[in-house]
Image 1 (cartoon, helix red, strand yellow):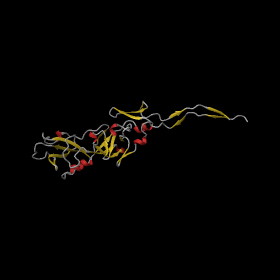
Image 2 (cartoon, rainbow, N blue to C red; image 1 turned 90 degrees about the vertical axis):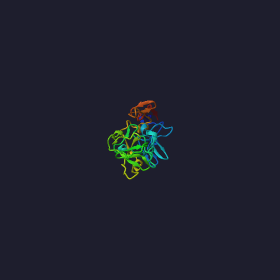
Image 3 (tube, rainbow, N blue to C red; image 1 turned 120 degrees about the horizontal axis):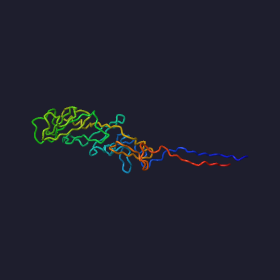
Length: 257
């Protein structure tokens, strides 16, 4: 019988993307630190691994909890993350959370962009370490139960500063403020309960999609205070991610039987 010619045409076809050289998506998210579930854009810093997200959202995880690395002294302990609302609940462990003293002498007012303090917060104003005895607390202030030379009050919601304190700041006192999510009840150390309950941070939209970049085999690169994003694909910078597919080309083979 005549030879049967089989034409095996292996035209270009698609294969799955190459394995990520540094970190697969599953090694980045989801993560857990204690009872806290961590999802993008937040990520846990792990030695020897490339970043899984923007620098401002890096977390340090230890036996005490997850801490925001971009906060001063890495002191903001993350209690909850709300991705849909782009917000997170934190507690500043630098504050006097044990007994409420000494009064803070620094302002809790700095956070790296694109994070910012939520307008849902209120502010506690402190007059601390007053070196001269005060005949009575300044208007609206309450003496701290643990320190008669320090005072606290709830701010009135304006863009506050020392000039907004009625009667002015006594020159012998330190002035500081701290955000709180839950206003205090003025029953002695009610302000302490407010400090312990922490405050709310929010964030604006994060450029790029680091999870897609990593899934495509790239590494995330951020610059200009996290306002720009690039995906590093083996030294080639892409806007979003590396090529979705590899194309495997073969020759046509004619097999005679």
